Length: 122
Image (cartoon, rainbow, N blue to C red; front, side, top):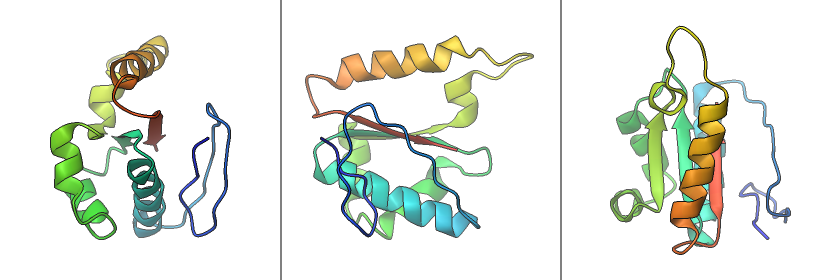
């Protein structure tokens, strides 16, 4: 079972969905960094679907504060940072089926390499 990745240890069953509220971009980045760090430590594939105001370089800088070897995880593919525009394929309408299908494909790709898939988005 995966651990949540906060200041307190919490074990959740696979497939759990969580919601967290935050007051600032800094608070969000701290929360996500902790969540991703726990996933990397637990040998999970980690996917961060970035909010429109956050670029991959900005997210990498935020993660480096908590995860010193973040570039190694990005290089090996254990961690991916994807802009929301690329993930959701925004156009005149939002295609709700595609993000779920993409997540399913990602899980299939990572199943042989990692213990699970940890996804965060905003």
